[in-house]
Length: 173
Image 1 (tube, rainbow, N blue to C red):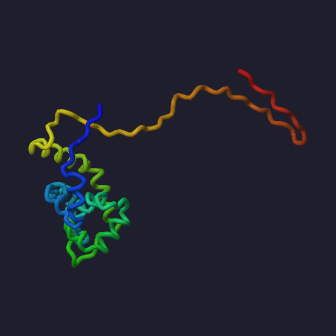
Image 2: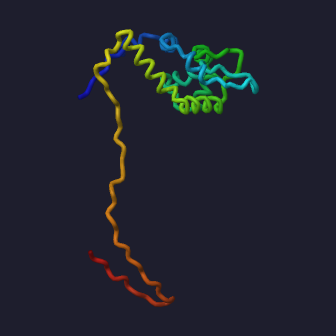
Image 3: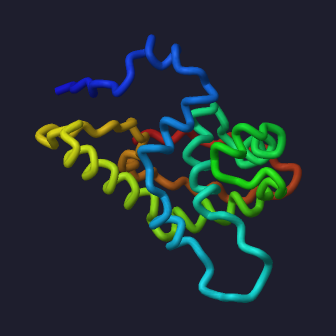
């Protein structure tokens, strides 16, 4: 059974919203502070910490902006002050490095924060009445698998002395 999820915005409405305003609308619905707190280092030592909530916003905004790599995300944060500001970074500081973006992403994966954020968002949507939770739709992709291979009959070929030619007999089963 195929269920089509009702969009929050129609395609026409989405096109009418200027791209500079889209991220602001997106981030007003998200409170990322509890998730960012789980990413903070417990050690008071080391370099000045980078705003983890801003990095989370950048990681969430990347697909909306068509950004698929940490390198491209770093470049966008470095060059586009509007994007950097909307993600929550200070404009007078450098954009986070590719390595920093990668480390934070790895921490998000290891601590399963993406799954937690998704679950919390679904619960918020239920409480707000956006969804009722009666139907579950799961997107899946076919994954190729190896079938159980038939046992092959091993044929050993005896070593031939140098200079001797031989034909290998055909094996029939």
